[in-house]
Structure formats: C-alpha cells, structure tokens
Amino acid sequence: MSSKSIRARCLATCASLVLLSAFAGKALAEPEMVKGPAAEPECMVPWTADTKFFKFPAKKGPYRIALANGYIANTWRIQMIQTAKAYAAQPEVKAKLKEFKVVSTGEDVPAQISAINNFIDSGYDAIVVNAQNPTAFGPVIKRAKQAGVVLVAFDNILATEDAINVNVDQKGLGELWARWLVKNVPDGGKVLEVRGVAGTSVDTDRHNGLHSVLNSSGKKWQITEVVGKWDDGVAQKATADAIATNGPFDAISGQGGDTGIVQAMLDAKHKMVPFGGETENGFRKFCAAKASEGLKCSSAGTGPAQVAVAIKVALAALEGKVVPQSVKLPLAVVEDPNFKKDVDYFPSQSDNFFVGNSFPTCGINFTAQEIMGQSKDNQ
Image (cartoon, rainbow, N blue to C red; front, side, top):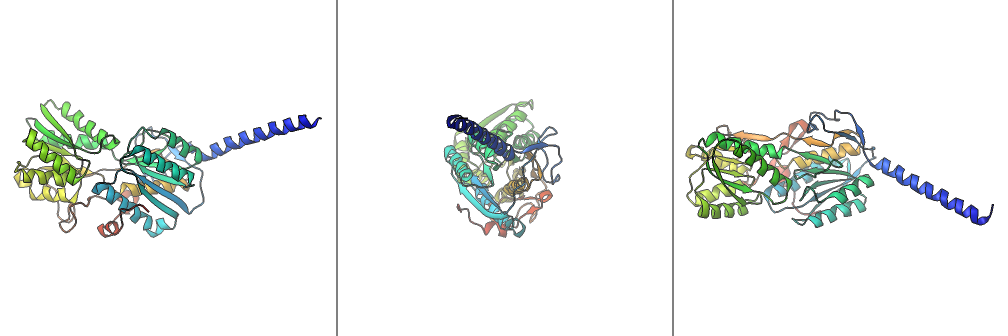
C-alpha cells in the first residue's frame, strides 16, 4: 500500500473517531428521559401529569454553580439574591459547592445571555437564571445542553423543554387576585392594575390571568394599566399619577410594590378599596391596619426563596437524581380577615421584607436575620 493510501486511510479513521467522540460527548452531556417520580416528590412536584422527568449523568462534586440574574432594582430581587447566598452558606449546601457565583445584569437581555455564555465557557456545572425574556435564550440553552451544563430557570422562566423550570402558577396568581376583586366589588367598576417589568414571563402571565377572570365575570370593568416594576417607589409614583388622571378607583391589583401603592392612596386621600397584591411585609401591615376602612386584601405570591429551590434542583440534577423538567411550587396566600400579627406580617421587620419566604416541603426556611445578613452585590 502506498504512503499516500495509508495517509488517506488514517485521515478517514481519525475523522470517524472524532465524529464518534463528538456524538459520545453529546450523548453523555444530555439528560436521559426517565419515568417519575422525582427524587424528592414532595418538593419537586411536576407541573402537570404530562411533565417529563430528567436524569442527568451524575457528576462528582463539589460543584461550581452560578446565578445569572437580570433585573435587580426592587426589593424582591434584592431579597432573592440575599436568599441565594444564605442558602449557599448553609453547611449541608456549602459542602457540595466548590464555588457559588452571582451576577446581575439589569434589564439588558443580551447582557444576561452573555453572562450565561461566559459561565458555560468557564466550565460551571450548573447555572440558575431568572430570565429577562422567556423566548430570547434559544442558542444559549442549546449550548448549555451540549456542554452538559444543568440550566435551571425560576420565577421568570424559559419557554423551552431543554432546561428545567421552577415556578409557581403565575397566571393562576393573577386569576386569584381577579377572583378576589370580583367577590369584593359586586357591581364591577374601575380597576387600577399596577404591572411589573415589561417583557418578563411573570408580568405577562399575571396580567393574562387577571384579565381572563375579569373578562369572563359578567361584570363591567374599566381597567387602567400602569407599570410599577415590582418596586415601591416606581409603583407609588405610577399610582399617584393614575389617581390624578383616571381615579378614583373601585379596586386595585398590584404585582408588587404594593406598599408604595397603598402609600400613594393615603397621600391622595383616596378611599381604601379591595386590593389583590403580593406578599410584602409593609403591604400586609397596611392590610391589617386599614381593613376596617375598606382595604380588603388578598395577599398572595411566592417568596424569593424559590431561588433556593432552583439551586436544590440543580444540585439534585448534578448528583444524577431524577428531577421534573418543570417544577410547580405552592403559593403563599393570606386573605382578609386572616392577617395575624407575627405570623402573616411582622411589625418589627422592614416593610420591604417579603413574607412567606419558605418552602417547607423542600426543607427550605429562612429567618429574616439569615437573609438580611447577606449583600445584594455581585460576587
């Protein structure tokens, strides 16, 4: 055989080996579809009966995990960052971590995608993300899957079945608030809807849930929408402007920043009305104190501790345990007249503290001191 033929045969063999290696690497990286239940079925509840279950190839720890956050300029997100750090610092979790990295990139979607790409390139084992947009992450989701990086989205989730999503029923939360308004405003009327951050799945889902119930209630509603970005200061100003131009209102629904919304009502001497809102401590203080004046509240939502559940799921996936592709978490709900001091709201704590920040079925519960002792900064 000529040297030229030998060389050609070697090149063909080498190319085949490279191709086989690539396929083997891809097969090793991607999760296997398996039957449930999950490793911790009380915690990792599948979203529906049709939810798929993943089993990733087990990796040896300790692990490098990153949190790629977007928007940071409200108290929920700040408390979320603090909760993530508090969870990572717990001894049984810390023992599994070689590194825990936090980055917040603001409302810039390309910047958040770039941060996730950087974590993949840097060899992180898992990335948890609170996504600024549910549909813009397709290429980076594919990269994470091919690289064997466990990608877990929570709160604002990703529109994909190639990553793990952890969330509460955000549309159901909007529906819950709307049912409260329908129940407590018997003749319909003017509603102020204070929305969150535009473009996020949470804002869209809550908005759609609210409108679906109001529209099908058989009552006539006139809805004024403003943007509050889940922030007390922004929501307070937006509410003040709405009262001045379109008020008074017969009911209010706020996705967050609800303490600021009530404060704007007080400043404008607006009557207290039925209110469907989130779980901020300050809002619940108002709900308890002003109920006799007409502030009949449904306070419901999900505490920032869902980030801890996302990290817990990521660790389980890295350890080769069975996890649902989509995990459904319970809502924390308290409604008038059941607001109990030092149980449902805490007079001695900050107004900005989100109550109900625990998931007992996942063994996740934090004191205010654990959370507030952490910084919101990138690390």
